[in-house]
Length: 338
Ligand SMILES: CC[C@H](O)CC(=O)C(=O)O
Ligand SMILES: [Mn+2]
Image 1 (tube, helix red, strand yellow):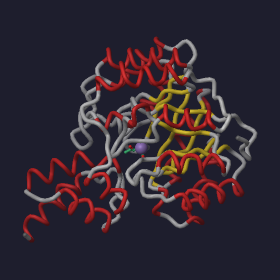
Image 2 (cartoon, helix red, strand yellow; image 1 turned 180 degrees about the vertical axis):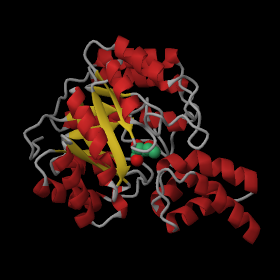
Image 3 (cartoon, helix red, strand yellow; image 1 turned 120 degrees about the horizontal axis):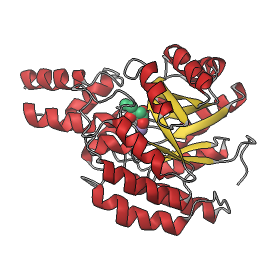
Image 4 (cartoon, rainbow, N blue to C red; image 1 turned 135 degrees about the vertical axis):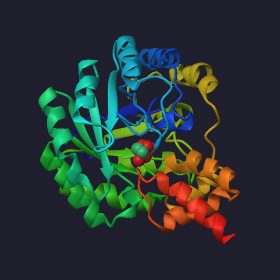
């Protein structure tokens, strides 16, 4: 398959970062060691390791990590012969100091993530990462929620700060293939850096949307083995690789090894199977952050409210990442109304 950008197609495996949401940030050192070892052996390009909300995310608000993420990053780096370890950083949650520490432990790439309208807060972190010699990529979250012109303007800002790629991040798994096509095409025509795409499977469209993004020129692709990610999970790595091979694209990642590690290494550590159920489907439908799922389920139980009603209301209020405290507020308000 040809892409309109000369860069090769590269996969970032996100099961140990996005998947952190799905296990309430309880990964152990041994689990990270085993997963990274197997992914590296299969030839994965990049493996992201961080708290689900990025560096510094281990807090009461977002959920405490069982093991310090720096220990997990160090463990992951030690297992890699070929793969590179990536980290995610949301300015305001993660700090420049944490970025420097992750770099000193061997992280080679950072995705600096902001809400789709707030790229300006990424300038310092992107610049510091470039000075450190890391690859620095911009990650525009909730990309479905802003008009295409705004997405383009924000991507240009990230590129101007030094981002080597800008991601269309479908945090809510709310995009339809035509939304992806329009956004990636608009970015392709507006920036010179690479375009990335990150999907969630809440509407059962993750693989289809990822193929659409690739057709439009995205070269940095996120996926997650066994779908281990927030909500219904991400584009399933081994499924994507199989589909790409059917199209004649071999990324140098061993498909059978990926299938084996999905089954024997990743499946046993999953707390629940990421599936399209009433909660995750409601998120895709309402355009709500996939990482809100467990929080909404907990708040629903506590206040006796259907988590879907909480999620729909959060969508109506256009809640953005970082507003996890709103989930409890909304549940309490709905309970009062009842
Ligand atoms: C809260 C950070 C978030 O999980 C980043 C991400 O993967 C997304 O927006 O989809
Ligand atoms: Mn995600």
